[in-house]
Image 1 (cartoon, rainbow, N blue to C red):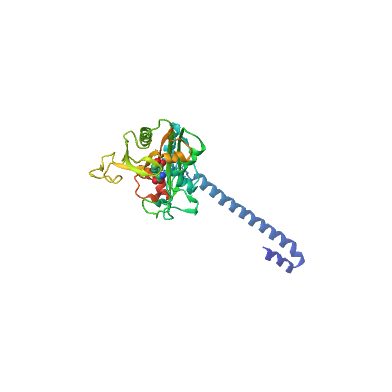
Image 2 (spheres, rainbow, N blue to C red):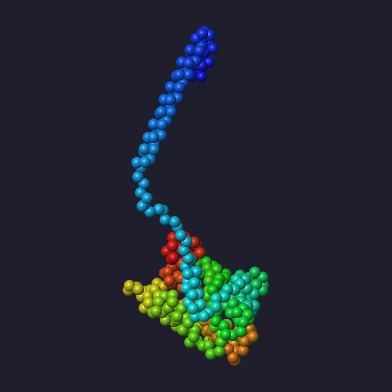
Amino acid sequence: MTAIRRGIGALAPEERPNAGKVINAAVERMEAALAGAIDKLGNAQLEAQLSETIDVTLPGAPARIGSIHPIRRVMRDIGSYFTRLGFAVLQGPEIETDANNFDALNIPADHPAREGLDSFYLRPDLVLRTHTSPMQVRAMRESGPPIAIIVPGKAYRRDAVDARHLYQFHQIEGLMIGTDIHFGHLKGVLTGMMRELFGPQQEVRFRPSFFPFTEPSAEIDTTCPGCAGTGHRAETTCRTCGGSGWIEIGGSGMVHPNVLRTVGYDPERVAGWAFGVGPERLAMVRYEMNDIRDFVENTPSFLEQTS
Ligand code: DAH
């Protein structure tokens, strides 16, 4: 239309007004036709949308929710049991003096656990704690007897990583000191703990052992939850306990008089017991796992199964 309008100049002057009118009328008609067409298309689209069916009852895509890590779950269960018994829950530094980690626990300077092969030294006098036991020393120095504490936390050893070892792992230390405290209390407390975790059939037994900071010392075994202590499952040897019906969960003993003396306690007046158990071990039994590395690989499919 613009090109045609430009052509008006070429017409005789008396023809020009009429030509202008004709062109304007044509433009009006075309614009009206265009508006009508747009209207029609728009209505058709609206019609189509109105007749669309949406099922608002269809479930949405489920959101992935987090879960508590199996190690934390075990530690939380144990913590809740001991707090109900009146124990305090303490946490201590993961960087520890070698004096607390070893000397104060009656571990002599030539003990092989001190070697660089076993421990991560930051300085000759500082080490990533190789166990939670140094918190026994800190707790006893902090307050006098009676003491009833547990210490959940991380420990570090220079172990090569395989299906049963990590260089960073967890322990829960327990310590009870007072007058008239004996091994029987320890067995009762630990039996209660295992029943809390695995049910009322659990028993606990002690096997004589050696730790420098306890005398006497004992390994703690509990009924294998995998086979209810029978040693076999469906005619085959139980994989969890290797057929013995027992699993080892940690170490324990009566606190050594040298340790009591080091923190200024009188071994003639007070006595007590200590234990250390491994949450990884307990979680592996609880969830029937055979590779400790699964705890640190953060695979969602693993974490979902154990939640
Ligand atoms: N600290 C020991 C370890 O890491 C475990 C242990 C044994 C802790 C005996 C104790 C105990 O409190 O009494 O192997």
